[in-house]
Length: 614
View 1 (cartoon, rainbow, N blue to C red):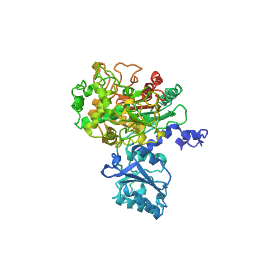
View 2: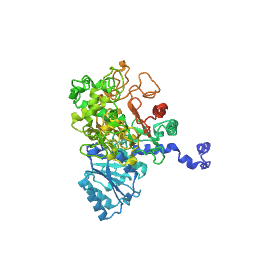
View 3: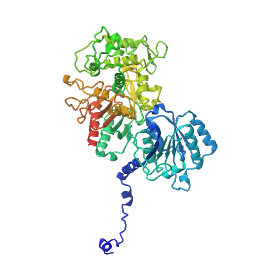
View 4: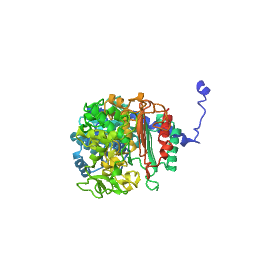
């Protein structure tokens, strides 16, 4: 009693309620809650290491949400990784409804069942109906099943035994933030770290199967210790670029160590300010094609022993034999020191007094003119041979650093010959599809509504039209929109996944696409003694920093990336774990608009992200 008196414990102290609501809802608490839930969600069964899903492209997956018929947070992460079909049932759904869903599940080989809209009442089975339990057990007998229970771990007792269920998760609470986290664990966007706090069903207390994070995911800047003041400065630069007409709009993404902490859009498709830029809108990536298409395809062929990177292009392209291109080596071409001309204006010889030569183009598609150049503009099927003939017959300059597109035309042709597969199809089946990149495509008009594709130039010289969904680069357009130097379209997220795959040493989603040593070789300086900063296909930091060229000052020597003519830029840094993507349509409506370069917008933003992660 004496010590109680001395401590003043007997004195009644009232809680100060003056700032109660702000004190209970501090910003940092919002960042803390997801961290707690990330450490709680528990995998108690994982047959054959099904989780996280490492080959989603090989699965025909259905999501069955039991307990809620409205859209939920757990569906959203799937859209970034794989195509799924969602079915929903209330807990009190009748026999006919359940049979209808069962029939629709016929063609699926994996069913992810999420039991939601639960409660805390154990006597009432935590809100889970007996019909739910029987229905889930029936599905598990005929399908591969992942069961995710958003309820008390004691709810597992009602589903036991689990011999027919491939993977079982306990997510504890039915909250939107938990639904998102649990789905991200299934997909490998987060790792599982939770353990059962009690014994449940046939699982002892402490049961918990850990998994690894294998994909990009989103995180709050505060949770990662990011300086948000710098992020506000990024906003300011992006908006200033719009005010000064560097571009009508842009997408910007930044990630550190696989966590996306900045993902924003600014402005509109065009300067009329009608259609706002969305995160899923698709940009013409221009020369990012070199590192997101041609280079990874070549790296894979090197890994498979089908290409000797120390050899010559003429070892594989026999039409180069006996020409001045016969000595060209892969290393010289990929580092832009082969002496090739920067580009060839192929289209100029196909125009007559600023109109099309009708022996080359027609306004309607036909067997003789099947290759689309632009709207109502089709080129002869065999004109591609004239393009390659001009490349073959072009002069060679000194063997010194001089940026050129021409070698990448040849590399694309070589890749097609070796694989016996169209370039775009090869990339889709070997990279884009298994990576879950549904918005990284050549010839995007075939796959997406025009309203989701950002326009580029209003071409008044060659195509005489506003370009939208047709590649801006003239040479790539004359090849039908698919080339090794340009033609790829995409959004910031899909570009970031490719860059993260490179940063991971060729691995993403628990799957190896390129060998680690191959990635290291291609992203390293090749000829610094020639004052050449390039890697194999990849751009690298300047050997002597110049604030108006290539990169920001904080980019490490091991970093790599590329820029694109249309106003695009991406970079990755192994030393800091930073991935940066900037996409814009600075060429709208005129490709001579150089404000984005004059203001160093892309590299200035890049520098701010480095300062934000310090």
